[in-house]
Length: 162
Image 1 (cartoon, one colour):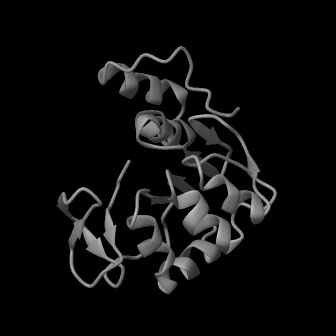
Image 2 (cartoon, one colour; image 1 turned 90 degrees about the vertical axis):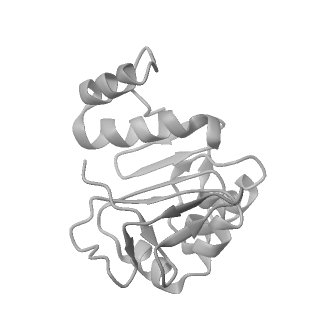
């Protein structure tokens, strides 16, 4: 899968909640989302609140015809207020589920909740399952199983459609 990390800021450097910086491949102004299969949102705070405050990202998400994935706080902080979880099954970091429910989400107490066009994860321990659910959705369960096995992650099934 061709993955590009995108900074919502004006430069490529992004610093996470624990002070670790990474260099994003692109900034929002440099990115072309017209053929993006997935828009994938990381979680954590204040990252999720920064994403929610980015009007350009909100417009991109609400107009996106492809698939969306979000983990940790982002389902509750970013997706729910945009109406993207209304009537849909999702999971998120404990405590953010109230915001999801308030916006009509059907919350599930599972590490990963995956449907055809929406994948959500509940937190850091679900990161590998979350990523493999995206791979399974796009490339098939066999590819996800192969990738997971290469990482010494041995789930009995790649079926994340609870």
